[in-house]
Structure formats: structure tokens, C-alpha cells
Length: 148
Image (cartoon, rainbow, N blue to C red; front, side, top):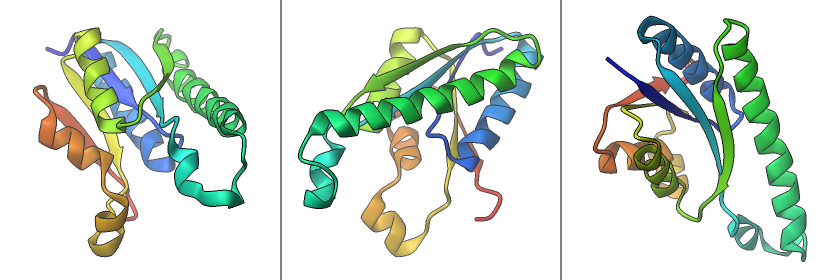
């Protein structure tokens, strides 16, 4: 039923839960899986002067963290003998970058976590998951944070 599953991750516990669900689905349907971690290359500008005057410091740090998240997620699949692809990509609009990756990879399912933020937090922070759901032209499985 699902030939290719895209799993956007951010290294959070809820993304870990989404990886577990994606692994189970991929096992059941013998799907190929691609993990993706999107880095917003312009995010450092919103952090103000407290971060660093050099954007390359931010990108270097974000890339290291992203690669660690991809490696940790990959281990979950490989523990079950499954090979997965993983990539770190840059994109100013994270949800749009996820959807563009899904289209380019011809994914037929996106499995992603949701932190379950409500009210003011959601209004201020937005929700990548909500934006993916609103704009996707393929099925999206949302794995909620167990604490939400």
C-alpha cells in the first residue's frame, strides 16, 4: 500500500515516536523510507545578537545536530534490518521543504510528530505539522506527543 515513506525529524522525543510508527508501517508494507531533517538557514537572524554574528556557526551547529538526529533514527530502522536513506536539507519554509521532498521522492506517505502545542504557543510558534497537513496532497500520519 505504501511504497515510500518520508519521515521528517527534528531530534525531539515526539519525532522518535514518529520514527517508531514509520518503522512499523514500513515493516508491514515493505516500504522504502527516507528520513529528512530540515534546517532553516535564516533562523539565526531571529535569534538576535545573543547567538553569534557568524551565520556559519549556526549552520555548522545545526548541521551537526541534524546529522545526529538522522543517525539516531537510522539506527532504529537498521536494528530491524531495514536500510533507510537520510538527508539534511536547508529550507526557509520547513513545511514547504518537506512537501517538496515528498514530491521529489515520490513518497506516498508522510509520518511526522506533533508536539501538540495549544493556544498561544501554537499561535506564536506555528506548527510545521499543521502546515504540512493543510498543504499536502498525500496522506500524512501525525504522531502526537504522548504528554500532550
